[in-house]
Image 1 (cartoon, rainbow, N blue to C red):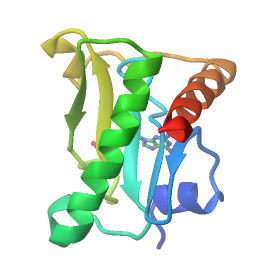
Image 2: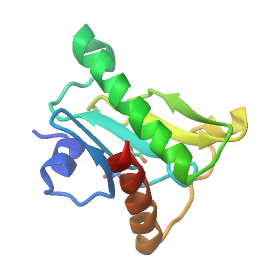
Image 3: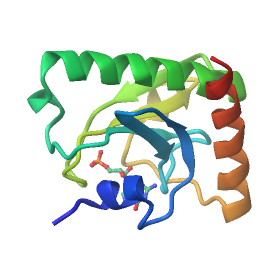
Length: 133
Ligand code: 5GP
C-alpha cells in the first residue's frame, strides 16, 4: 500500500509544496513546530533513510540544503535545524525547521495551528525563493 507521502507526491492527497525536482519533493509539515517547517522526501518509497544508497542519500541532502536556504530567506532565523525521526510515517523524510534556540527542535512541543491561507502563503514564498536558486 502506498504511503501517505507517496499519495502526496502523486497529488492524490493535497499538500503545500515548497520544492520539487525529478527525484525529491518538499512540502510543509501539516503540524509545524514553526512557520516554514518542511519535510523533504524521495519520490520512491523507502522507509528508513539509511536504507537509501549513498548516492541518493547525498543527493537528498543537497536538495534539502537548497530548500533550507530558501526557508531561511523567508523566515530569518539563527539556523535551519534538520532532524530525521521517521517513527510516524514509513517513508524517509528530513525535517527542516527554522530555529532560534535548541528547544525549537523539541518534537513533543505543541504544534502551530495555521490556516489554509497561511500555509499557502508560506509555501508560495518558499517556492519562490527555491525557484530563484
Ligand atoms: P515522523 O515520522 O518524522 O515522526 O513524523 C512525521 C511527520 O509528518 C510529522 O511531523 C507529521 O506532522 C507529518 N505528517 C503526517 N501526515 C502528514 C500529512 O498528511 N501531510 C503533511 N503535510 N504532513 C504530515
